[in-house]
Amino acid sequence: MPSPATAAPGPRATNKVTGVARAAPGGRAVLVRDAAGYRLDAEVVRLDATELRERLAAARSIDEPGDRAAELAPTRALWRGQPYGEFGDEPWAIAEVSALVEVRLQAVEMEAAARLDAGDAPPALAIVAPFLPEYPMRESLVAVAMHAAYAARRMPEALRLYERLRTQLAEELGVDPGEETQRL
Image (cartoon, rainbow, N blue to C red; front, side, top):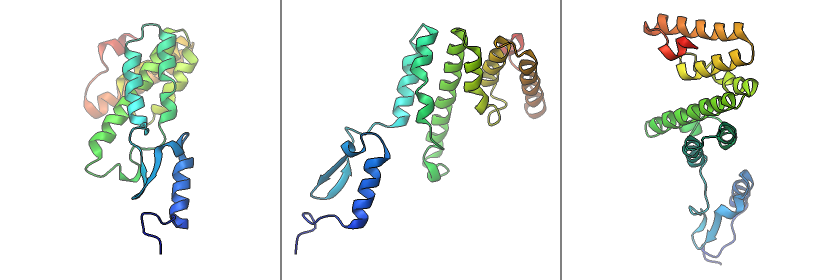
């Protein structure tokens, strides 16, 4: 009888390994088989959260708007569902989930602002629009959307965005939008 360290993996283990290997490009490279079985090679694994943070940091140091937008564009594809999935509401994950959501929103806002600075108003609006229903009182997000709508010659939409923000801030928090947003 072969020892557990040298025995071939059973069909269930083989299916799981195949699933992990196919889950992402380079999936096989992260799987290492040793005497204890299969493990993920931490030297090869690249976390989406790490790439998101690195791209945001790199973009902050790029002066040319088109290059800044190009640095941030791939970050949208990194986000697939809620961070930590079904475990996102667990006490140990809540702070990290909130931090990742904030980094994502900063990247979205920065990419849209860079596109605006590069003269690409319609794509800038398309980048931020999906986030407006979920974050209607995030002033920086709405401000970018307003500016993009205005620059795309969609003045009524820009005014509606401002009025919605102003009304919600007043009703729910008893405050007005900041001076910069009011000037837009």
